[in-house]
Image 1 (cartoon, rainbow, N blue to C red):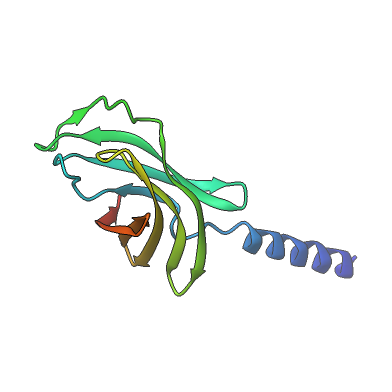
Image 2: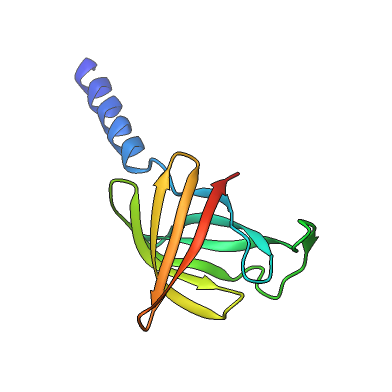
Length: 129
């Protein structure tokens, strides 16, 4: 019986570790875009990657507004590459373009940048909410 209890406990511990949340998961406040707008992005697993959906938009005065992009996937195909770095795709609503992204996580901040057709853009620093 002790062996069965030990085996069950070990199996539970191993599956709990396998389902531990990635540090990128959660809600992030974006930097202001070219129009002065920002948003809240909810990052969660999607298949074998991480994705982020725009759940709230804010105008240049910081007031919430209903954006046509709310509900849109802003981060997609994103995977950890080690050392707090991630690569994937990020959609920029103000430019209507999807960039090959590089994300760098450091505590509660996320440095976002990306390139499309050799043109790169600094997406600023996002903060975890």
